[in-house]
Image (spheres, rainbow, N blue to C red):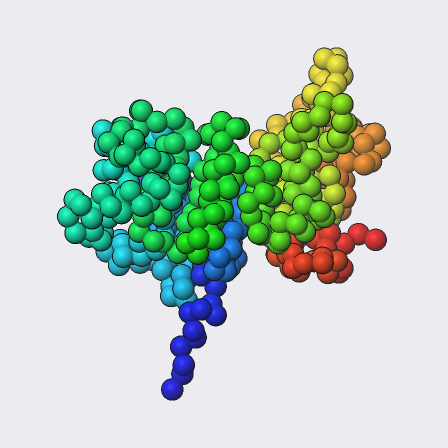
Length: 436
């Protein structure tokens, strides 16, 4: 007889290869014909564990997928693939009827305290609402007693001053304390905090995080802390997972990631933290360009178009070639631009990702001229990471073919030089691929 593992020895939360894709609607005709209109890969293969009593921070820019990931854990969005286990039991894919009992053990703190409280409900009604939904309390007196205890725990005292107030009577910090009281009133094991202090005044942020830490200790809570703010993550989190375009690119202890960031994106995030002392000069090496389209992410490493250290296996492709040409033209004088633009034909064909790209030649010009133009650009910008991915540039009858190295998609792997466990998804840490 096979023994079931003791839940106390298992991670509280175990997420494996999780994917959440949202289908694009496309045009009416495309939908009628049943054509695939693609999807946005909001979460694209995320794996991590969360131990009891731990605080794990999900950190990334807007659009990185961190909020979608947290909502997938709560079954607020549908999982496309992969699994989520809570206390050793798979909870992804459960119907709402079967998931509902779990909501007492999994709670959410919303980003906006002003929108997360019903303006027509008193604090007593709003905080006590979960008790009535889950049939925990018997009668109004029991609800009032439990709400009073919750409000006292979060510092809304004397309780009588707040029970019958409406959200409009409270400050932003007081509203978020009420939201926190509502989250803990059912005695949850896991609390997902989605940017819980981002809309609060700077003066109350530290107090709110300190309160959440006290509740963690007193109630045995575990937090999944979602934020774009690396400063608060450093203060509050035990471990940090850095997300970029739907994937975790680095995960490890907060101390290790802050003292020695490994992924180029993590370094860029840390260098973007404002320096409060205006006399202290901080070197900035911020990534170029914008976050790519999650519907058609870059080949290979999604960060490679913005990465200063990208090299041949990172995923260079046809769209990078178009971007390189357009960035060059933005630096030229009008006369130089018109001369070069006339040599290059229509670039629309480069928008489909491919490791082989044909640049058509402009009318009245030759492929030899186009190849010479590319060679001139290569000699003038030899440090551009783009050229590390180019295998060949060959003139053809109607244009020039540019071939790129085959890409390798990076996977999380342990960093050998870390004092504490850190995993990083970057080819720079693969000895079989890393340059020199």
